[in-house]
Length: 293
Image 1 (cartoon, rainbow, N blue to C red):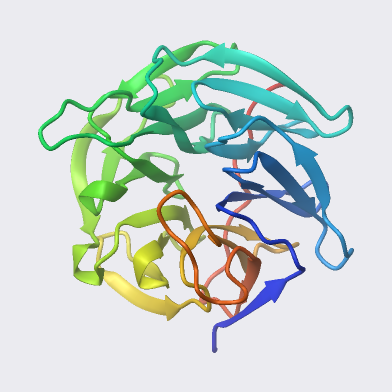
Image 2 (cartoon, rainbow, N blue to C red; image 1 turned 30 degrees about the vertical axis):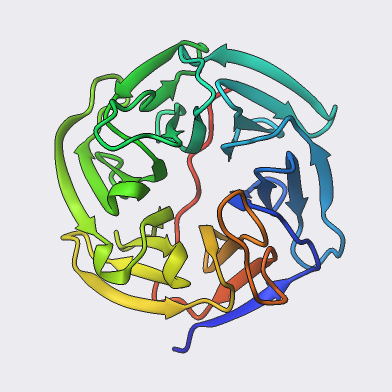
């Protein structure tokens, strides 16, 4: 089966990020992290819904209600699609101009796990921030304090392993994961320096393979559960960023891209667009949702 990648629609994000599938609405949601735009599109319906939230935005994930949980600069919020309202529900205990929340994903127990990015960090400077878990009761706990640029959190099919990238280290880590306890047994899952790129957004398919975006290499990589490379897929965009499974049977991937971020500028006409990836070797799984009800 040949993998095919096509652009969907005409949206053009500065920094497209954090696609997620809304199984109830049968829609793909994603953000322009710099512009503070939240998109929701029912495939085949034409123009996507456009919603405004304060930028920069780190990530979103679906809720059990008609909403998404949102990682803002240093707080978590809930955006309600029906009322178009944003409610800040918890703060992260860090306030520094070079540190903000970045990528996040929900676990099987309904928690939202999101990490920070520490920008402009000097060599040897201590990392500020780390990895945080927002519980449904709106309490926040810190899970790690040694991740400088968190990306691609995702979980194994049995929900017992958390994968988390530190993009600047060009490493994807694996941890033993308990939704009610601390992270344990941190270990290297794989390193991506050989591709001359850090890993960005990631997801896991139903067979337990991890897909990640290699932003600076313009590729998708699929790794087996032992960290070995299974395949590389070229992407028709200069700088892809993140991906999620979607569709009625989760047989498709949705992929976001950059047109012009704070550090990177694309050179292709479709940069900043949303892409559909088809012809995959395995389907994905329904996304975990934040337990807001």
